[in-house]
Image (cartoon, rainbow, N blue to C red; front, side, top):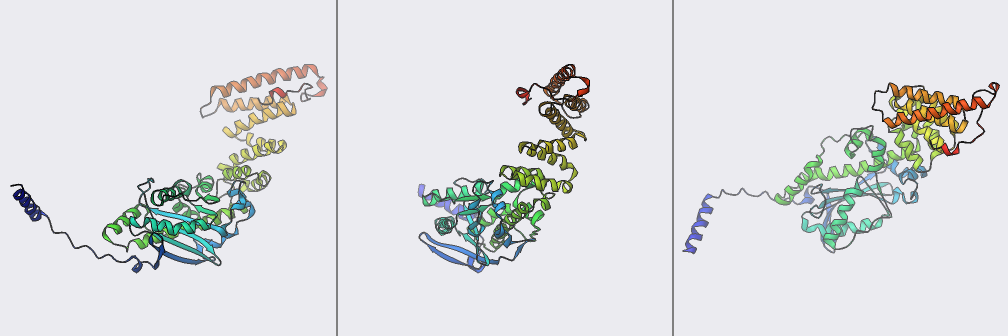
Length: 429
């Protein structure tokens, strides 16, 4: 009886099942892409190699420009820490195409693009696994190349690409991926310079708006995992040609972006209107190039949009004050105080501090404090109560000091005569 029931169920399933369409023949990947198979200790890995003359351009930027990084540009890219590690001639540019964006042990890097300068050419190699079972072969082929270069250059690689490769090495090969001497992730300087200027700091946005790259038939990034799964399941490799082209364009844009950053750092005056000038000024200052920053910043003020000029003047004043040039800082504060809004308020407060503690000019300090309170009285923005109270306390102290100064000194000495008693303990007020 059980046997008869099982037989009837099989017959019923066979009768109700629709005929399966014939599977499309699996085309060999080498028939679509000009590649070769590289033998490793874990099997074969398919590799596509492309070469570009260093004089060729990606958009408006020549690939050669990445090789021409000056010492100052390298210093700024590392914030003054390890500039000797930035040698583009010994750099490996990396970008991965993955089965998802979540990361973790369930995400594979099925295509790894790696590029480097080789004499008068830029060599771009793409390592591809036809099936997840070939992952060990891909990583074995990549391991030798990765170990050859002391500098890796990526875009968001510190957060995504390299941690993913590290995970895959541990899961598949049971060994750690040896890190380079220095990893330069261009997403971070790009965000600093353009996050207030561009709607997005994604590589696609940067290449379109800054490099002038126009991808006419590009494969959207969000479709790439699906195209790979379709290849694995059904053997359709023709759409993968677009994935390889997308990966190659990303790598070439990465090289061009490095060259563009070098040009900006070499001639900041010419590029200050194209980037966030305040972020660029802070980058110079943090790298210990305050003197150079003050020079190009002064020359750039007229080229900066008026909406950003006051912020740049404020940052310049802080830079000059830290460098000991208080008179230069005062000149900028006076320019800001002549305007209106929050910058004028902040400048009046700094002028009040300077006149009180450094010049002992209590009359000028009183006028600055009163002007600051006047700005607060008509401020359209929310004013913290402690800010008004602090100014009122300062003004009360200045009134007392001014009256004491006038009482102790003859009228002919003037209201601005210096006080004999230092006010060091109030310097931080």
